[in-house]
Image 1 (cartoon, helix red, strand yellow):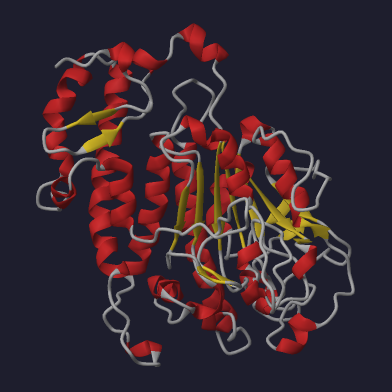
Image 2 (image 1 turned 60 degrees about the vertical axis):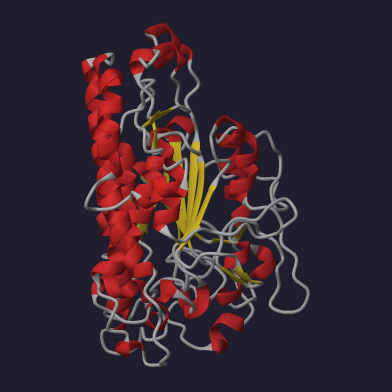
Length: 468
């Protein structure tokens, strides 16, 4: 049966006789005319990422301060990345670094307990009764989810929900209940691209790519596309094929059972290539989910707090051992460099993903995908799990009015972002703060309003940040 172009839109698929279905990107041939493109409201997207265990923050007098302190040197538009973030230099004009923001309700709670409220701002407390609230991403998903196949895509390296104050998901519904996160790339891939029987899913294998069965089915469609769209289709098919290969490799790493030993160095069956490929695959799946407009809302919790689960082995990607312990060994010889090297690795992968969005034009001519996608990455603690001065990066969204190329410092006492730097004991994180910070939810309210959500408050905040 011939494909009828007028019946195809961003939510249609090409299907093979085996039951495999592939979501299509938008094509200008049948989706937009020049007149329609001029009046089309660009799709807005949001992706949020979480880094556990804080970031390296040696004191100014420490020799490691110049190279391995996470926060840049300088301020406003006159700033310089350290080695922790300098892979993001090509994206300098597309991002803003923020310091001096935190959630007031948990500033005196150990950072390991605070991933739960990173996107909610709720008073989850240090112990006792536990109550959370709706997360930033789900507020946005409520508005845009009806336009896509999935309301949101909730991901984490460890999967599931975790436990109160030990979240393994960033997303919480209106009742404050955690939304389970998916951590298996194969299942995410199948969810995005495979429909039909179980047999169809089983045919996904490296030896015979699932895409091979679609090539003939796509031939008629290809003939009816413009040359530009033919190139778009070929690039997209190649991207999905490459992701399929990565998924198979990543599946082997994430399904590797943990040995029942305490010594992390004995975990010889996990190679550095495993976690590196896994993280890259997860970012690629997010890109494809956005590219096909399968969803416009994504969260990915890169790691769980307190060194629990598979995410604690991600530092193997750079030849180091347990990720969480890097935050405890800053003052040991080479400690700040090791911690910073892992942060640099995360910056590289995050930057690779953002650059991919930047290099992909929107089909409606409204700039790049990054111009219409707001990325947010950070942690609910800074130096040694101190729940203040969160390290935060906002990227993209230029078509939403965000002004980038800045390093913004908020709150009194954060001129050098050195408050509580160098701490490696409980005495530091638990003491009362002697300075003021702004509520992080001021930024969240700003984000929601720029994303098109009509709201005057979020998590108790009614003020926005005009500088961003």
